[in-house]
Image 1 (cartoon, rainbow, N blue to C red):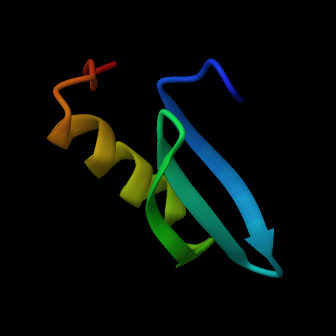
Image 2: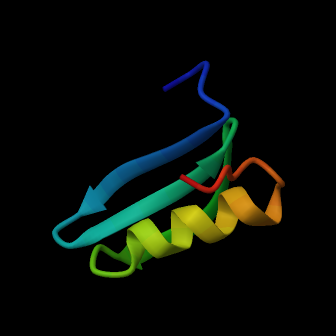
Length: 51
């Protein structure tokens, strides 16, 4: 993940942490909304491409 633009990493049971580069953007995000949070992060940074 060290070279990733964005990261999605497990941080505990049912929790993830989101990264932009090496910077933590959000901690302890519930895994049931984590994908949506990652998509929002990508959209906020104009990195999302509609499938």
